[in-house]
Image 1 (cartoon, helix red, strand yellow):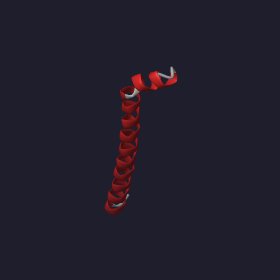
Image 2 (image 1 turned 90 degrees about the vertical axis):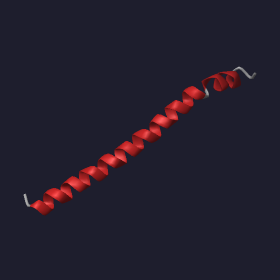
Image 3 (image 1 turned 90 degrees about the horizontal axis):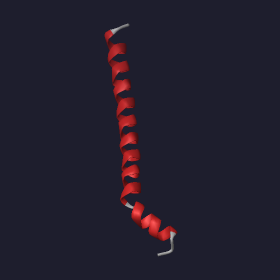
Length: 48
């Protein structure tokens, strides 16, 4: 494999990893918000 192909492949892998990290961070923020509002959700379910 040539140096250019290796560099291009590495850059592509890095880009994919950055996208996966961003996606995971977004999902983790949603989970955090679920727990943060759990009490409110429970009160709303009970119509309080």
